[in-house]
Image 1: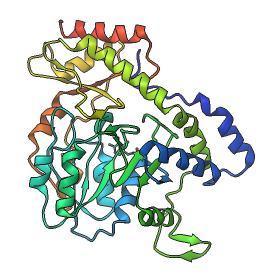
Image 2 (image 1 turned 45 degrees about the vertical axis):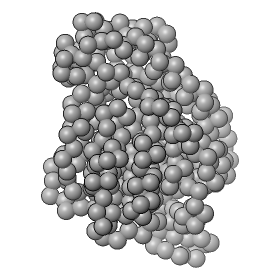
Image 3 (image 1 turned 90 degrees about the vertical axis):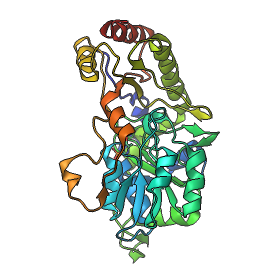
Image 4 (image 1 turned 60 degrees about the vertical axis):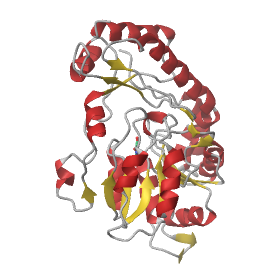
Length: 365
Ligand SMILES: *Cc1c(COP(=O)(O)O)cnc(C)c1O
């Protein structure tokens, strides 16, 4: 079986042992070291480590002082954490459709979704490629919206040379399957000194100094054990991303000409960090997307459907007044057609050949 994802944290053994032996295992100097390294990734002065990516989104919305009824415009084609974070922060989620070339927010649809209650624009940089920030940033400025980037899948990605996480509050996930992992973890990046300060206070029970509480806070802290897992990967980020990029190029070279299969595109001005390599299985394919997925699994090729439905299309959100479902035909089609193939750095050339050959065979190409 060629798995869809492989977790490789062996390089962290010594550093993790060092933390365990020190006896100081909660948030401390390793978290600080992780944060300092992460500012380089987003190219901003501040990185605030937290306990997961969902928390990063929640905390970012909390420091923006949203009031009940305030709206966040986001993508309907995303992991459920994007929506759950908006609801946990007490805001209302409104959805704009995506484009089918980058799978991210369509700026024209965002313009149409903005209302007088909209306070935040939350683009999701899906699969490792950034949303069209060149069009979204002016829209946010025009309507006075804060930008919270769901950059959970986009560590190191750039748009016209500017990194994910540098456009507002950048929210990253360090979950086990993400490009950089601390097992569970998250980071918020920002160039705004005041917001970074508020995030640090909020993360630690609203406390600046011992028993000096400034706001009703929370425990969003990362531990030094987790930070130690991530530091060696952060040092290797370029190598890790290059391996993913080479794998994606090999897959596209082998799969670009198949009827019924559309390989992922890297749009001009953007760099892709290939969290997922996601193809569209279109209506003219020899088999349906779901048959394709089943056949690949049967033949030992790991694969994943991210995501099978639009994020709001579940019973638990149906009657929630803070979830404003909308017409999103592109997202609905992409949810029916998308399938991700292995692209992780541990793939060998033989694995890549096997994936290409098997996909061609299943699609009769
Ligand atoms: C992983 C992910 C999150 C949530 O991160 P966790 O660390 O799992 O809490 C949020 N948004 C997107 C798009 C993700 O892929």
